[in-house]
Length: 405
View 1 (cartoon, rainbow, N blue to C red):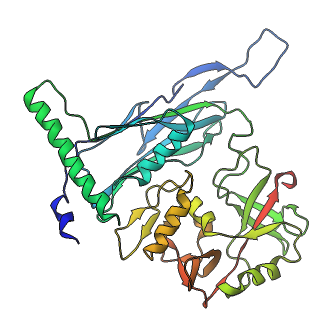
View 2 (view 1 turned 90 degrees about the vertical axis):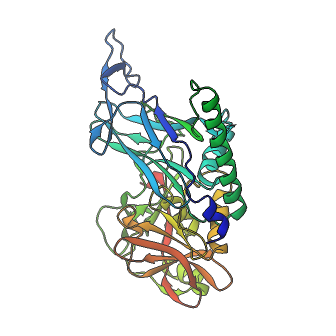
View 3 (view 1 turned 120 degrees about the horizontal axis):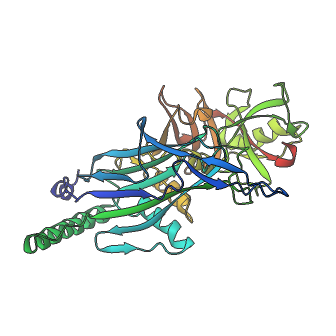
């Protein structure tokens, strides 16, 4: 490792504090159910009870995560909060970064544009990475659940030498300044180097075009007849078992993206035969199809903000992180190519992407390789660059109209 890293390898940044607030109506509150209309003076009410728990223990509305030491090479610190709906009505979930300060800089978060930029910046703009995710953006009544995850990590070598060095110096100067202020005025409380306030809210689920479609969740199984181009109910040569691969299908979306389960009978070929083999496999189908891309896979596996990792011999392992803002997915894809790296994700988290063999995507890695994916071991699957001359299976993506489902 380069000598300058050794000089600040154990920076003691004053605690990073995360405050998750505003889980609204989290205990036995009652409200009028707006979805019912009756010509009557009676008002139907439904119980609203959203419970939060961490490691099996019920937690309060305010979740405080405190880290005493943050430094290059630290083990990833994570918090997982389970959100369960024990009430009578479906609920929508969302989170918002209310405010964020990095050293002396208050990061803007007052418009929809800066909100997306802020989360992207915290995920990718510093040597340390803060990643946040909701596994589902709604919870059905009577026992459905979602998980809210936060992770903080700092790779030993991020691949950006100047950023690593400047942050080490800036954070040291900030910490020293805060300690000096406290020495001169003992009543002064030193500020943490980074402070982020997160608001997570639960509201009554209202079905509109921008709401998550509760019928089509990532990983759901749907039987689909590729000849009749509609849902079917018994597996056959044409009625295929498929998996929803939309990370968050919306009510207003007209289609659902489906991928046949990977243990079916697919054609095999080298990467240069991809288009020909895909056409040959689907030419009798009435269902519209397209090629599977590495972007599809990245959008899916990036939702694990703890264990989906970018690996390379040239940099330290690091969490893939949030990919939702602007051209972030292209930047991260170029990064993995430039560092000749690969992604790994946990088999039990995305089991519908796990297979003992290899599958091509229709995305080039470099001049001689293309992105493929396959099981690495019993715990992990990898997405990696594979020689275009080697053979892998080819799986299509079905574009299923919702009207046919």
